Length: 359
Image (tube, rainbow, N blue to C red):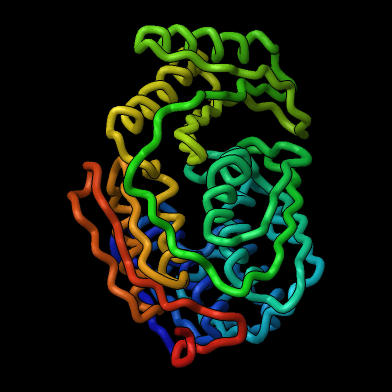
């Protein structure tokens, strides 16, 4: 089976590429992607995307055509993923802070259905704009997948801020027999809010300002939080505020990065506003996690149903991509920019199964 994907659909970003590579690897089908990242200012494969392409090729012993910087066409023919030990470094292509989180999300589905455990070292950007920070992967994304039967962990060894990069993470992934469906429609009470106010090679006073402003804003909404001040090891300079709201055993995550010329208080205000939009929605899943779960919901056994604080155009694009590979039909109740409900009947994929034998 060959799946042809137009990378200019919807947002026309890198998520189309990553989801396509992940599903092609899991389902053992060839994919041809054209117009890669056509919706971006600089289209085509950039270092983090090319690292993801070469990583998925290596772990599946597959073949690629068009895997070069700037390419807007890629053909990927996966082989078989066996698990094992791997290391991937974005800087081997070009010095950059390419996101290791997005590379990890590309290869994770294939590793879950491998016959043996995997240990992966990823080097690049850990906390960079326009991608989930590795702390989000650790504290929000992987705990949610644990509910579906996934046994995987990720640890940030050295932080990699934009634009220097140079971060290091280690991940361990255990094989699964199947993924369980998610039913997340009724949000539990808020148990606690915890945060990390982080600096690397910068004055700790910046983290203190993050913390002070966040606590002030939360107090105005009758909320409290425990925020840890962290001086994180890194090769470059960076600062950020990362907040996690625990509703029962479900976690929602929000973050902001410091920038030259941007006040620490402005970063804290952005994080506070994102948290409160989710909190006031009454929904279970935060807007960033929702589109990351779609692939797993489609592969799981049974019907998954989640409520999300905001349906994004990013999510709708990813729905389209998943439906090109997997014989499922998502139901999305709600409008883009507003809360909604997402449901799908998964195919119940098992290790070694093809689409014809998935369920």
